[in-house]
Length: 200
Image (tube, rainbow, N blue to C red; front, top):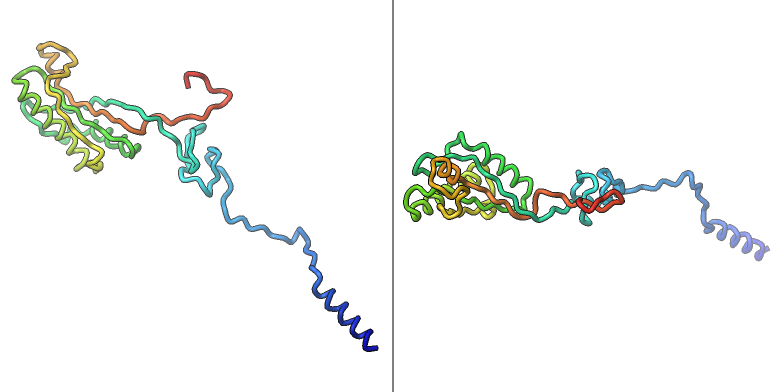
């Protein structure tokens, strides 16, 4: 009798420790990370730091597009009064466009180049073109809040004329300010596909 009780007790203990079978339909899987790829760049949303990538853009492991390193020049339509380096607010249009371009590409830097006509002494024109370039740079920094470290200015005086003459037209053309932007900007690298061509 004692042995029978012991056997029944043991059987009950074993059945109580047996694993309980769970119906697979009742199991709930909780996915804590977003595995979708909304912008279709091949990087899941949980890891994507640039979630609005252009279609077919070549991206890094964080899903950010790679920019081709290029140099671009902008002719700034800023007219200065004779013998003046003051930038009038009415002349801010092109400078504002340049500032917006620079904000889109925070790794780019800009060199403001001042150029002068051949009217007057070469040394004076060199100093005047430097003041004009610095005036444009100051507007970019103080009015449009670009970081000073991204903006530099250099005057070239009359050493780089577009028209090598001393006519009124040549003088007007040669008095100019050019912004040369360099760094990572402008063209997003594309992934190679079966539809890519050599010119892409």
